[in-house]
Image (tube, rainbow, N blue to C red; front, side, top):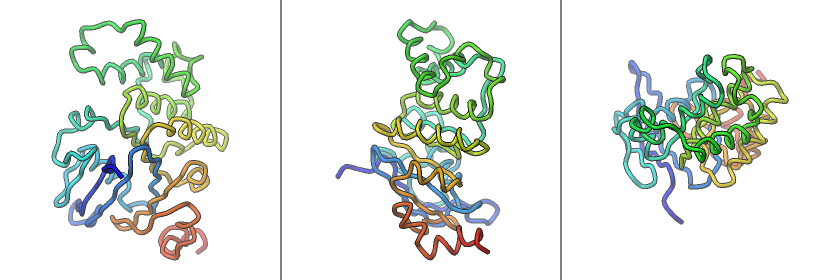
Length: 248
């Protein structure tokens, strides 16, 4: 078996004395679709921030494709092949959908290309292809500010896909979506997961059931349990710290 695509070893991150990550160890394999669940404050978004280089660990190490990245700069880590969709879909509302994806695509190619080079026909076709994948091709030249919340989520997923990362990080991709939009998002993620490593944070357990191969449950800044959806939902520790509150 090869090296994991991402590996966190004994990482601790504190904010004003609160341990957001508490000696956490976590890893996932290349080509894997993994879902992180857990109550608020469990450390899910902090883990993604750590992987992206937004925050640094007090102790511990982070490896991406076998190379140590903790302490590295955000843009350098991104260029190594990590793309992230944040929890809130932040689009450039005054720009078209095409232009939003174009910015993400140009970012991958560096500052010089973004500032001084026009895109080629092949680049245009790539952007249109991504918009087609996320179901927004017919709105390519509409302003992004007019999109629904769900469409903005899909546009931001497209902006990550176009960067062709080795690892995609998706933070709550169905937050605020309708049941129909959630189902479509599950189909979208499953379709791109065929040849992509994807780490998803989500609270919606019905959505988790639709996409998860393996689920990692976080609690108090550490891994509580791990396994299939059925395995973690039937784990007494999961019921106690996460699902138990729904039945209280």
